[in-house]
Image 1 (tube, rainbow, N blue to C red):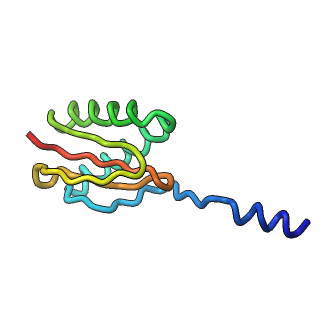
Image 2 (cartoon, rainbow, N blue to C red; image 1 turned 30 degrees about the horizontal axis):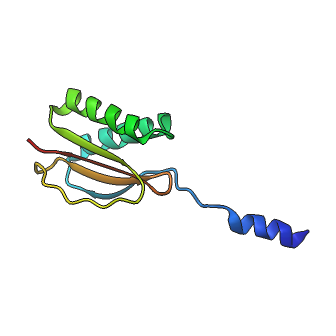
Length: 104
């Protein structure tokens, strides 16, 4: 029995629920708002990354001006050109990544 329980423990996946910011050059006030927005939207639409990205983009366009781009998903790479002080790349809930940037 002890081996079975040990096996179950070994199979558990550790999921970090806090956002881990990998790269940003946003000012502190904007950064915190965007992190909070991204986390709440990703929690709400955890099974629909496309709807999460669309919701984040529309909110960012209204709040910080148009030309925002958002990618929500797992296992992707990116290289973008963006306006200075307008990019955020973070991980949330394990492997879920969110990238948002503004370019005109």
